[in-house]
Length: 407
Image 1 (cartoon, rainbow, N blue to C red):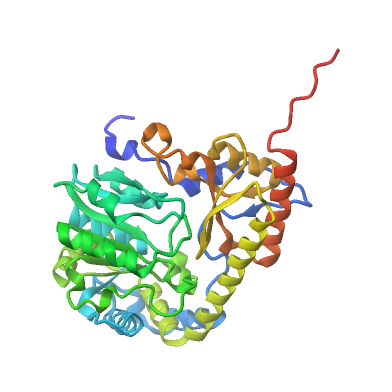
Image 2 (tube, helix red, strand yellow):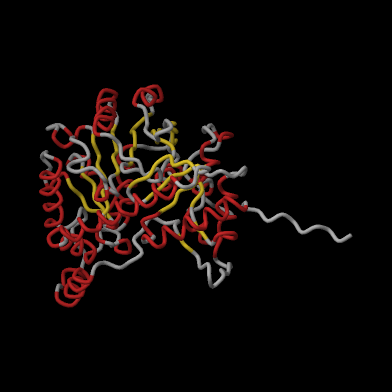
């Protein structure tokens, strides 16, 4: 194709869309329907009270259909600031909050203020693939930071990666794809490193509402100067099942948000009015419902941990929030394993090759032996089905031997 941006052309295809192509023409036995554990998204619509509220907004709030403020509704920004201040034991002001069209856009907008082609950003591996893709599109180097066996990154190792073109360290906790929850002291150590070296710490907390720990997962907002280093990202999509309405948030310094406003004004002009109002209604009315959703996700996490305890050939590297990140027992790269699981077990999961560099690309080789299982997409019966199928393919093997040649 002529006149194609080479940085965009060199960017990997969207992993979830690629996985969907594996099943596009597949047929599944009636007694073994597809179990899709590939995408980290609620399978159900918003709860009925929220849908009723959204219906009322559509019918009776004319402003919901018009352009709004580029940085989001004042009422939603104020509510985020108030809740974050209370929940994190710190001080967040409305002018330190912007609303975006999803958390991916929050990351992209933040990066637009930080880095230009030739700069680099440190990403722990396994990384969230859309972060890597956005950096690739912008000609920004994604500098891999290998994590330990527990999938936790090391600030000392990160320090050795920083040079004069490093603009940020990007963390995701609870982690996508690893599921692990970063200890508060580890997050603080990365903040201290970023501050000392004059770079930003981006902390993506998309799955914060499903953290297994009680109370605040960190105390970064308790630092009165938090916004000199921290850029926190959040998503309303998982909390209130608003994935299709694309509502996210950035918390950072007001002068950075002035630059974010330029970028957002040229991309979406403003976040969607209905989604913002739905998120605000959820924050005002669904506290108890969300607490119940968290408990359900924790029950599913416990079921995953118990299930893998019965499969000694499989090794759990991380499990939490929406994900289990596991090492498979097959002598084949994870992309081949994932495709074979579609055929042999009617299971759709994502391979570790979508979340980090292969050994030939400077990685540890772990990407070729791992799978991400988005267990939040299955109820307890679905998780039981998952383990029935994994036991079968582990015992029988993934590849059917060829039929013997006729004599």
